[in-house]
Length: 177
Image (cartoon, rainbow, N blue to C red):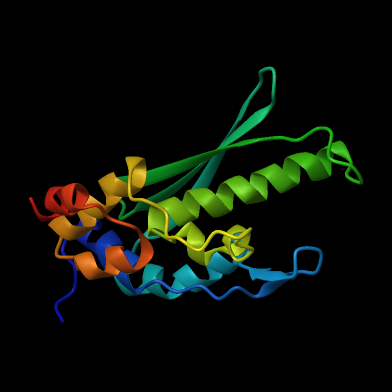
């Protein structure tokens, strides 16, 4: 296999091969999950292999509900591709001090910003292992659809996307176009 030649193809390569174990256990919900740290640890071999970096930037947004915007950025020194997640800070969470409430929201935001960047399907992630009696795949739309289009455009396999998302014939036609 030839080495990817631009940042988009590097990211495509990483998205299609990335795996991160769910090494953490939530004893209350009785499920395993992956953390932002797990994702960052799993991505390190790709960074070295492709001579790219990944960083996370956070921004506090003050409002009726405090919000943390987390942005995951991959860079090859010239170009950057980013994805973000926005998480509210629950200041009424029992048993937590304010720094823990912000830290929890920050960790959650980082995890989902990285997940968005690397196309980690939330049905394979921590919060979805407890299905709450739902067994269907999520539909492909919004930012995930845009990333899927880019993935297919760069040679990615539609079947990989189908294994993670419920795709209507109309969406499949968009992906093939």
